[in-house]
Image (cartoon, rainbow, N blue to C red; front, top):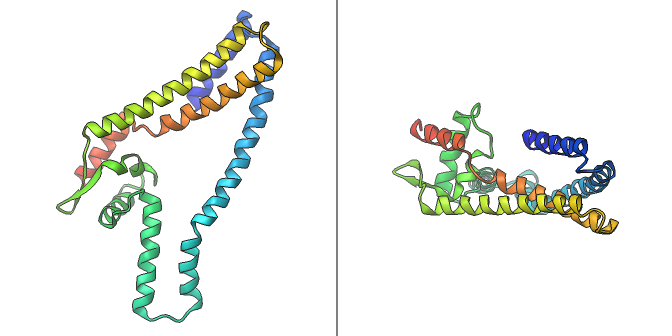
Length: 214
């Protein structure tokens, strides 16, 4: 993310220095990016509310444990249900056997990987003979190729919007520039989001090492 921002900053600086991009256009871009950042921040609050609704099942189960005198067997069942829900949130995998192995690997390699690491591979991790296996077949490459394609499309739209505003600034009204810069910022954010969904070669090597050592 920092490298991408450095590239964008370098491009803006060079464009202003060469006269291709005017100061007023840079200020317009900042003026638009600010409110968009505020909207995104507010959206996080909405997402937080959605998460509260999503956590209602967990809260209900915990409330049963805290407020009712249940038998040991019933309490154990509720705790197992809570554990399954939490494990699914962490791993993104609903299979209990896979959850247990992934959680064990996360604890063992907590200094190497983050809690989100295995989510990138969740569709291609299977349990065979009690061990976790990574099935890197055609579907894996196809899925990540689609992520890369979408990511590049969003980046292209973002760049084209900036280019159109830059080289046609006299022919486009102010509201047109507002729309173009808004599209550029939104498409750039989508580019980053889809790019993060693609496993890097370093992550693939790390996954292979972790699975070999299990």
